[in-house]
Amino acid sequence: MTSTDYTAQSFTTIIVSAPTPSGVTTVLLNRPTQLNSFNHAVTRDLQLAFNLLSEDERVRCIILTGAGRAFCAGADLSTGTLESDKPVLEHRDEGGQVVLSIHRCKKPVIAAINGPAVGIGITMTLPCTIRLTHKQAKIAFPFVQRGIVPEAVSSWFLPRLIGHSRALHILTTGEVLPGGHRLLDGLFSEVLEGPEEVVRRANEIAEVIATKTSAVSNYLTKAMLWHQKETPEETHLLDSRIMAELYQGADKKEGIQSFMEKRPPKFTGSVEKDLPSNVPWWNEVDTRFRKQSKL
Image (tube, rainbow, N blue to C red; front, side, top):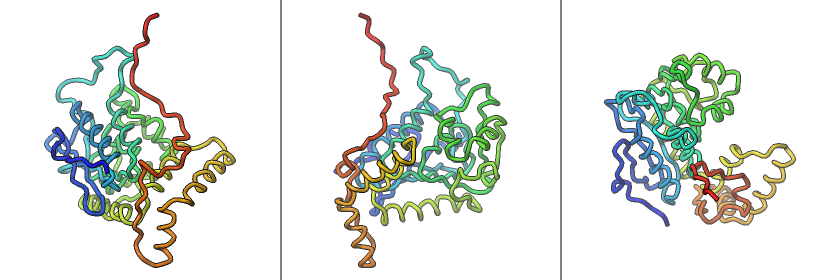
């Protein structure tokens, strides 16, 4: 079993809790005096954390939240303006690198947006499985007001989550909106009354995921939604292939047996060992820059 001592990691901007007995881990953005703003160190820490958590078989669900009154106030501009120190073709958006780490994580991730989430502060949550916030949390995608474009893969995720019409409105104006605004309908699965309720509710949901659901089923469900086939017929063939192999799995047997016996399930399936043989059915793209050798 792969496991990690998170206190031994060299994190400087986040705190990663040890998994609870049920398998819930919290990743806490921990720069409260800077409103958890995003910089190079946050990029490094979040990428490392989600890569480690993805492989830690003790972990069944992850909560991402912020220390203090903010979730993440966006890019840290205190050290100067945003710019790249690499040639154009070598540049990789740091927010996008974090988003892809979360997107590829094998565990469900709940974003508990307890306060302002601006720019990368909100776009980093788009690949999360579940997003929670409260009615007055300040949410903004301000890129056009800064003379840039939507980053962190948000032009791909956002319209798929809330539709092109609302996404274009939000991205074209760059306005700050309260968490309960109608333009954000569909972005958050729950909008709570106040910030103190957000993390509490995230823990309740995480506990359900950790104790009552199959890790293999959750991984496959996420993959089927984000890596869809082009037609209903192709999707039917994919569903059928996956179901046929899962019928023989230990988690399916436990799911049925625990239901019939009216007891909580004890799923033992592993994403590392028990996935159907056709995974991945999608094309995995290597985003690293590679210099072409000269002949």
